[in-house]
Figure (cartoon, rainbow, N blue to C red):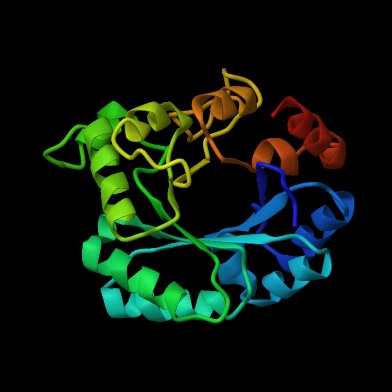
Length: 230
């Protein structure tokens, strides 16, 4: 088990490409995230592959469905022996409770976290969804729902941690932050971004970085540099 705060997102479409990358970072001090693209393409085989390289796995499938369906999906996730799983907090209290019950009843208990609002949203794009609350208030509300359902933490922008922490005063409540870029002028689909150092300073427990690492010429060296920074 690693103490690193770094989670590397395996943003690959095939098992072969993922394996090629894993060979480059063999022995790296980090955890790995498997998202919808890779898991949909390759299924549980990718989990088995990563375990062969001795990395802990964040299974990032963001379940959002009726409570019974999410309960069964989380149970299935637990059976793969992953380190962390997640759901969408906007699925509501009953769904979050069902997800927690699945963890509680499992022999293997991964961390369970909830996505608040995707970091691809900014104020303008969020307003178009039609929610009554503004972006920050909605994030705090969803974070509180996750806490009430005994989840281990949330996924949010590092920019939101201070306002959430002022409401949820629990040092064990985890903040997992995507939208991490090595430069603050990155031009992609992420809107609410931070550098690794900024995210940790703001209170992030784990930072998620994908393309800046997976597309780098020497990802193992870059992982070492990021760990040194944070």
